[in-house]
Image (cartoon, rainbow, N blue to C red):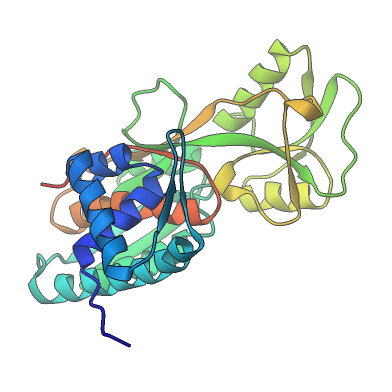
Length: 302
């Protein structure tokens, strides 16, 4: 069997197209033209002698070979970027006190932090998780350097990172409510997700009946899986044992949740800037692996 060397530039374009769902969005994300990305994908397919995407005039999807390649491509790029960062990357160092809302990429966060640690071994990250309503006051008091949390659509809090659908969920075997009162497992009353659910239900002639309140998303997730009530979560926080509820079940569409980074304008030193950039480039692909559809903030590389 002949030896085939896969160029990282081709793999980077391939992963960008797979993550963004199209050539145009991928081109914007990596700072290339659409035609340049198309040429890279064509060269990759010629190198391998197989197709990695199924293309029609209306859709783009991975082939079975493309799905296999995607996992390897992520690992190869991760190793490449780690090696470059260790050898010739900026000598970023310091301590970053980070607050992360616990509904943001709950399954992906440990992996993301592990990758960051490998890429930036001289940066120490102290992580505090919780609700954004609790983390922002800590930021204002100087107890945190940076916060990643949700914000209500239209708010000017921080800088938008990405948008993600909010979804209704119930336990897989739970009986759905028949009347106008919807039993809800929810976060405290000042949670924006809870208010969004109340507004949507009210417009549909329904109302929420709070039967379980938790100060953490993990508590809401457990209550939903146990069948104690209906929950509203970002799609990436949906767990096995949950059922997505749609208009066919009598639940109207919810707005998208906006996730923002807050406090970066006050950061000093290299640690914070390195983390923000790494987060932006790594988070959306990881959330997509969790099964969520996200609308990322376009990134343009210099």
